[in-house]
Image (cartoon, rainbow, N blue to C red; front, side, top):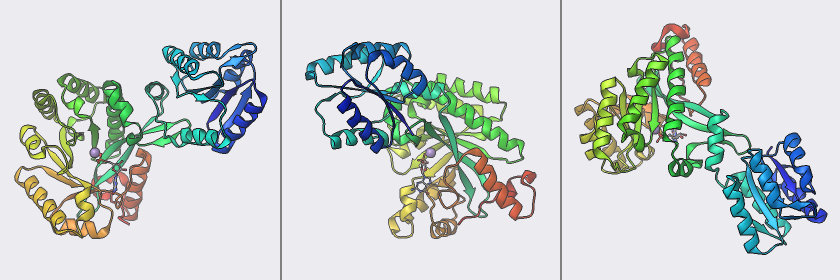
Length: 398
Ligand code: G
Ligand code: MN
């Protein structure tokens, strides 16, 4: 449970705040003078702070200075009966100290307003910010999950898509959608790219060590593929991990327009020369897919899951899926059907000649160990050793 430190000298309001915080799902601790803050930071270790501005023995600005000096990175809410301008200025002071300041709150405040504010914080309607993300990179809060990509003829795993998760200390496990704006607004492409590639390739090497001849698919933002220097980083990481480049496929999403077309084509070509695969994610849904396909050396298409979802109900979805499969065959690209959720969809895809699929039917994104476990289970179910290779690593599609 997340811990909240309340710094408030008005005892009635302090009790109200503590009660609201506990109701909202926090562990609350309150202090009523500024001098008690350093000790509370050390012994209680709060995730976030609610701070009153005025105290008999100092003021909230002093508390902010102390939080900044102790590199506190959690969210901070200022709360006060002072006029709005003072609150806003104090919030700006906090921002200038590089603190994670949330919008301030004026007293008086009703119990229900307080509770709503605090539970919004918990459910994450206030998204994490750049400071928290830097901390996540530093403190090892990021995880890679892997979703199996299977051969439709026999459910054998042939690859896995690496998907990022953020195991936040109090917000819980978050998928990238919950922090995408933060990634886009900040320059994390390189640091995050390094983490994702290194982790995914190390895990893939572990699979190879067990005789599982799998590929790992890693999602990269368009900014990555537009910058040929970042491809040098890919090469360096492949080298460092000591894995064959053909085990890495980079997925780029086509929903974002490529701004630097020449850079993208260069980077993509370098990537292919290196020996990596290049997949177009969510094919059929995005921005000038065919033009991108024409300009860039893709090796794989992933059919957008919106078509697969409708494949049994809508003739158009089926026709488009067929057309993409035919296009893949003509251009010699491997085609993965994404978002396969039912046996009916899988059977329909098989009948159309689709060879590869991914989706909840075969397994959700999961930690590497779990992926190994499901492939191992399926293999031992077949009475053979896991290390026997890819033929044995079938998942049961239930
Ligand atoms: O577009 P991309 O393939 O990168 O998206 C991967 C995301 O899709 C993952 O976060 C995963 O949770 C989700 N996903 C994976 N399989 C399925 C599925 O079968 N159905 C749906 N609706 N979503 C899926
Ligand atoms: Mn993807």
